[in-house]
Image 1: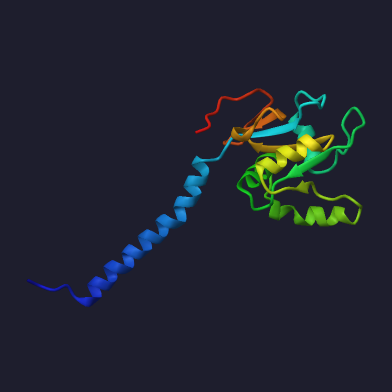
Image 2 (image 1 turned 90 degrees about the vertical axis):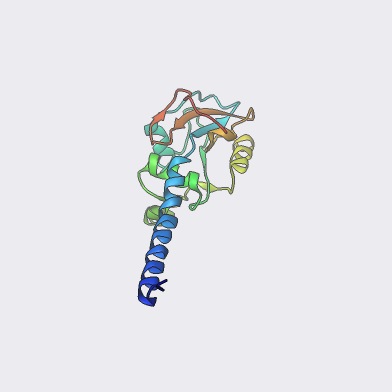
Length: 170
């Protein structure tokens, strides 16, 4: 019986480590892509809005539109900048990630305009919407309940619609 040389053994181990590392680096992004949720843009049940256009939603989240048609102040709410749902929302709707928006918000700060308020969970968004007159936000569509109403949908592939999509909450 022949014993493999130490060089061959180390070379095989080195290759195995590289393969495992590549798998570990690729797996999270594949899992993220496969598990992107449908996003529901929501408003309070008693708010008169029934649906919203993509253009209007963009203006609201860039804080270029600050009042509803009825004269009520708009209070958009965001999730934290590192939240997976926020990343999906920002890239789909606004065309950039939150980290790329810092210069924009810093420039507006000196003109008295602040970015949307930030809360830390889907439940906090729902409560904020429910308790804050004129507010608008977004949650994982599977977290929707009777306390709020959906007015716009963002699909995992980035498509957007005012019509209720077909989705599965497992």
